[in-house]
Length: 519
Image (tube, rainbow, N blue to C red; front, top):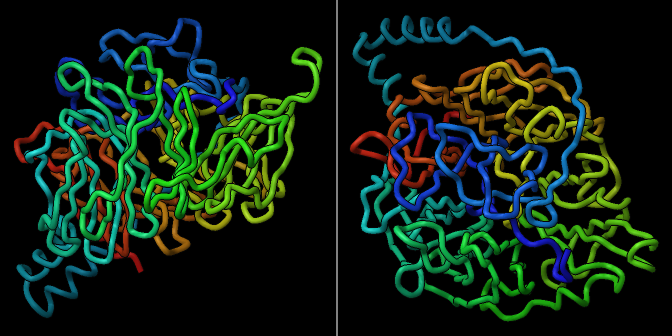
């Protein structure tokens, strides 16, 4: 591990988006489609014999060759948790939808006729608006997480820059390209405090393949104006475009490459604080994970390299000063990375996954043997894992099951953050995708669900047993017309689904706004 902490992951942007819901497109030269959460990763450019976190990296015949995938801690040397608890029983599914529809139909037909009922139900599921993927900027295959919101606009980060659309109509408000020519976005966290969006980018590779990721640009999200951009030292000898991590919280952004680490002010790009001066002398500068909180995990050594005392530390960092609001000490390889910063969930090779109180740092529950039972691949791009959401004292995680007899079997798992107990898991299959929704403004457990040729849905889970109820059902084209890596974002009662690339249909969507009647 270097003095600047572990290098960022070696996967395409470090994200683990779900795989496409339709048959895969023929591979484009130089492109590597992103894979689903926690699933088998293809061989990387790192030396052989260095598996992914909690999952053996092996070639699978008949699959697209993938770019280098994320490691954990040191690149290509992630830990693996052995063993697994017995699977939890599957929840019951409520079968009330047909009854509700029949009641609604009878009521409306009695007052307004069958046509009115049909219009009411149909209009409730149709997209509010959509943006075609056939635009002046190619979307490419490089997925980034940057989808931001202002009072008037939803802003989407694309391969060549950022675009803003009116939240009510989908009309394009402005579009700002990346600085320079021939560049491609590679990292863009979803945090956009103070109306500022941050995007990392670099020169694209041959035929649009991933190239360098060595610059960062900031945008004013109200006007689209570029605020500043800056280049960074980077080694990246394999030109994977994945040697940069960007941790964003509030006014600060911590940028880590394989050559340097700096903390900058989001507003103007000036130095916010010295990353080397805010940790004890025995500790490395550490790994930063952003989101609602800025969390630093770091490794420490006191004494001789071979016989000295080793430990890890986790700190809640003040984004304005870099100073720790609290620091907790753990054993060696115990607190290595944050899977989520709110709720605060840490992971390490030594003792697996556990939760802390984000205000005080005090221990909460230990989530036993999670990485032995499910594929767990933490982000190493400075953002929390995308497929994690916390609602009250419950942690929801979209996971892939190990030792499944149903291929790449996927499920949604709920944990009690205080006891660490696995409460329930949703019915698993190799076609379904569960993406838990964050920041919905309610205590309801909501997820966006797609399942092969089925209609995509907004669903709610009962906290006690995971019983699943459909809140809204959308036309099949909402899923089929999305490109690779479709991902939902919730904002003020509207579900926005973004994607990169193009779907199989001629009218592919880059962005679609969906109604969500959630009280």
